[in-house]
Image 1 (cartoon, rainbow, N blue to C red):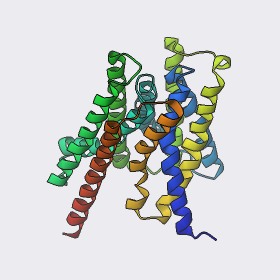
Image 2 (cartoon, rainbow, N blue to C red):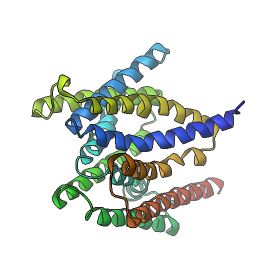
Image 3 (cartoon, rainbow, N blue to C red):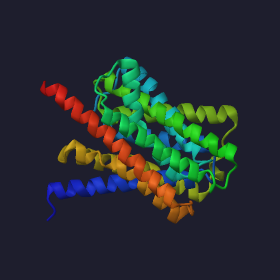
Image 4 (spheres, rainbow, N blue to C red):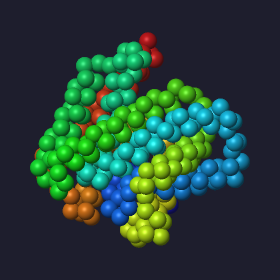
Length: 305
């Protein structure tokens, strides 16, 4: 019989692998339908499921002020971050998209340092930030000569992915500082639901959508995978991991996701993978790890003082 700890490690493995493959699922989905429409349907389905599930389980309905806050945060988290990340995959590989997204802890550190005067940054943190962006630069440079789209479109895809990552960084800070008295998963459900409505309204207003009946099977399978596995099941697995493993161990998924995306994209989508791309991916992950490790160590030292 597996112990609770063993189950938690299995949950961590599932979270790491599935969240890494969601980038490939999004890439496959946008091949058959407009990217923002895919993101809108995914968020509408996932948000509705989460809100209804937690209301049935007895969670209290947020008041109007909480809903407005969730709307504001959701615009950064799902309209801009998830929406633009999905859109970027029309131009760049799933692996590069996942790697750029993995830089968000670095940007959180820099935003807090510049705007909130966070003094926990050390030289080790600076080295980690340098490594993180250097790894992305290496992957960007190597990918630029092996992509099937024009260099202008490729650059546009990188810009979209970067803006998406910055929006996710801002939403992370907003969530941490909001301190809302709402279940975080109930909150995510409302954010997804609001964002899905906004995105679909935009798609209808700009005619960047196709009729539901014309959405191909591959895109529907991608949406189902993203909602059921990417949003619901792995979220529960992640909660279980956080409850039963140390935070530092539970956070390992963030370093595994982009590597999974790179290799699964290679096997399923024939995305190019070279020694430079592998090396750049490893450098990026190491840089992100160093930043998080240095910040945790600095915070612990201040708390002990």
